[in-house]
Amino acid sequence: MPAAMFAALFFTVALLVTTAYFIMGSIPLLVLKHDTPLDARFVRGFFNLYYVAAFVTASATAVSFASAGRLGIAAGAAALAAIAVVLRRKVIPKMDALGTQIQANYMDAIPGFRRTHVVAILINIAQLVAIVWTLIAMSRQA
Image (cartoon, rainbow, N blue to C red; front, side, top):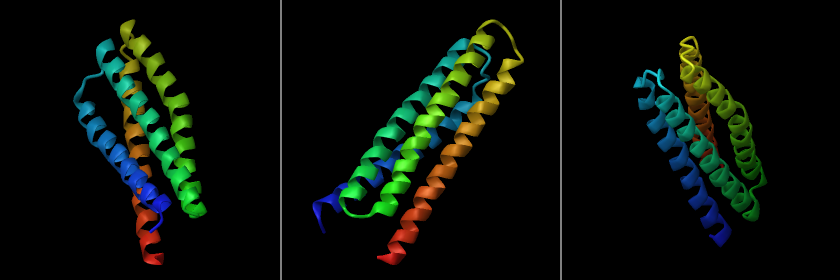
């Protein structure tokens, strides 16, 4: 097996671990009431870190699969990296705005923040399902 394929497998595992870890970490955060600025800042920081980690691991996965000559999988991983960038640009500012409203005691922002949190988790779960499904489909072709 060529070294590029070993790298591709390594980064695929890193991508899976990153995605699964942040899903498992973000679900328990739903128990927070989201009624204090500290809750909002913590959840926002958690998702910001996830989007950066997802971008890095998905990019490395894409490059390593492209080097191994698996362009279809490389394109899928590149799409995951792009999704992480888009989500970071959409979700984080929305969490920031809602967190500012919570800090100003605008309590109607709490359900919006919680909804944003849940949607972000559901998107992460969909990404994990897509990654696992692709790996299963790929293993059947090999």
